[in-house]
Length: 151
Length: 330
Image (tube, rainbow over all chains, first blue to last red; front, side, top):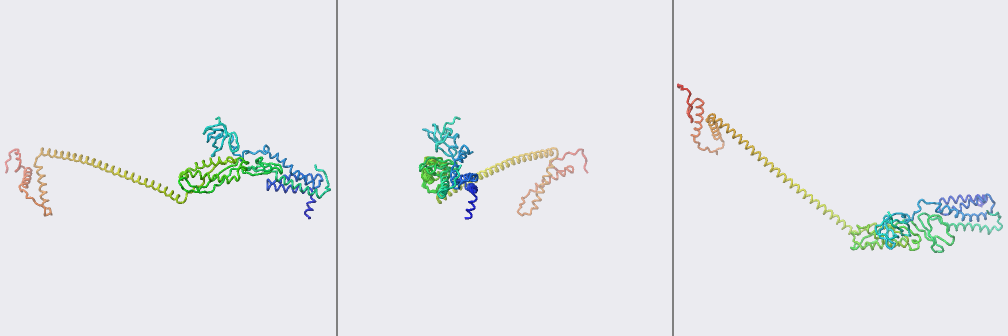
């Protein structure tokens, strides 16, 4: 009982203590969402120091702010903000766009096969005889879109 | 800004506040999704697939949406377990391999096929049987590239609908049965022994040819030597004859210039010496032919003549030259 009394008397500082604990947890176990609660706890703690709010309201505020922080964080995680220097990672077909390859099986009726590296991919595009050079312009699932290479 | 309220209904309000925090935790837990690089999550809206989440931070609609499958978008390798395959020439071989594949379309890989990996493994195994069953054992062992290419073509075509790309299929081990391996080893050994023997006999043949050539050359050289020697001998005899002829010439010139009795002296001298050696011969078998004493005497007469000449006149075959000046003898 003495311990709970002790924490009760700390007042708004409890939020900061919780926040620090949460940030520490987040850095040890990433991706488990402690960080949102941590940010919310800091904000509620600051409010609690400046205004005298009933602790139930503090809890409600904490819950609401926790959810809101995610939406703010999302802006920083957006692809145009958090740029990757390898945007094509794990997208094998996309990595080949722009490459000039050889037709392995003549493209007829818009479908054929091209040799990329040491394997063969299905290709879609304008008809081309076997051995022709084509440029990969895009992807369609497991299919590569090709066009005649002019050079 | 939160209004200042001193809680009048503290009991229920407290519980509500705590529950709200719990709800916030649950909502955040189920709607905020951080997809790590190398993974794609599929989203289901009341059980129906709607979209795929790329790596990054995503927020789902609470209650309605949930994550369906977490697909691995990296290239993966599958071990194809060992299996017995019967070749076209009825040899039983154990074969295993590996398959590399990559998911290109997470949704298709998640929903078009149940149990993706076992499906790929089974498909590969059955196609290994098909491809290898149409080949002889020797072809099997030497045409792995061809087998891999055929397998890849078939399996890749079959798995296309699942949104995956099979990049490579490799046969790892081809183990023929023990006795077959032994006979293959024997065959190879015999082949090499045959080659060794052929090489050895080649060597012997070459050596014999070289030896014969050497002998031939030696004989030829020897004959040439003999011929040369004969030539030189003949030359030597010629020279000797020439010398003898010259000597004879000189002797006869000397005789012509001098007296024939000088020759007679030499001859008689030799004759007597010969007689002496015959007489001295220890061998009793030497037969003394009856000598004509007259011959000996004759030779002695020759001597007498010489002496006669030497001492001024006397009986001789040749008339003594007339003395110059008639000197009365005492």
